[in-house]
Image (tube, rainbow, N blue to C red; front, side, top):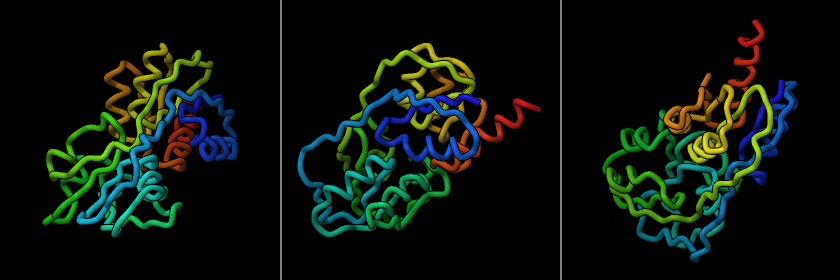
Length: 215
């Protein structure tokens, strides 16, 4: 089965390898690129929590942190794994991989918090906790010709919106609820949502769909 992988080229390797190991024929079609916003160190002094919602945010915190590291809250197991890859450990991961889940579950009192994420990120964390916000990267939409495939894997809301703009169709598997919401709002057919927000979750979901489509 031919599966379209829409992750940025630099981040797609583990997913491509895992799909091949499960007998899929993956084709890479990056829909977004990640550009760090290089505006100096991320000063963590005085904060009780630093919050990251993506692997990209986790990498930037690890790379550019300055001052005393506070407790770290990470949305999603994939984000927590990205922290671990850089020698950092998440102190808190909410049961629901969403900003809403973190707002509901983060231990109170929160104290002073810093949300490190993408330019244009949803302001829920900043508004509700509240938290200071630092944009450390931006996503740039790409416009490749969509390849043919039997299933497309969407790993971010940005990728979902970009796939729809390209006129990409076919059944889609998403990495989590925010990506599902963005995909459906853009008119895409979401056939399943990963149970864990990581490579294994996407591959397992694809395998379940492949089995059901052949039965």
